[in-house]
Amino acid sequence: MLLERTLSQLDVGFVPDHIAQEMGHLGYAQWLGALKGDAGYFNEAMRAYELAQPFIPTSPAVAVFCHLLVESTASPLRALELKLPAPTRRGGAKARRDVL
Image (cartoon, rainbow, N blue to C red; front, side, top):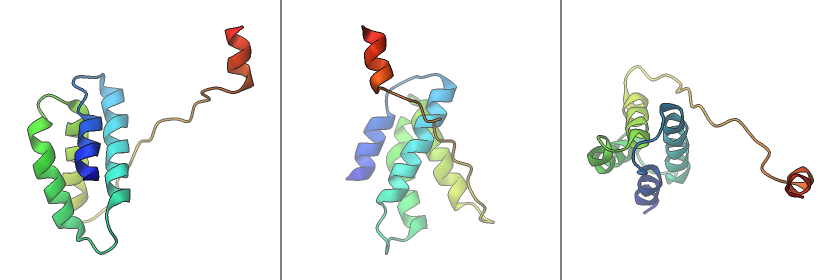
C-alpha cells in the first residue's frame, strides 16, 4: 500500500534533474523505512521495481527511484549515496515579519 502511495507521489511528470534526484532519493528512503523487519529485501525491491517500471519513461523521479532499487540489489553490496535535500528554514518569526 505504501509503495503505491510512494509511486504516486513520485509520478509528477517531468521535473528538472536536481529535483528528480531529490525526489527519487526521498522516495527510496520512504519505501525503505516502510519495509517490515521480516521482509526479504531483494524480493521487495524487485516487486517495487516491477510496479514502478511502467512510469520510468514519463517520470524522472521514478526513474531515479528504480535506479536506486537496482543499484541496491547489485553485487557486491556497497553503501548507497542518498542525497537528501538541504535543510531550509520555512517559517518562524522572521517569515511573519517579512510578510508585513
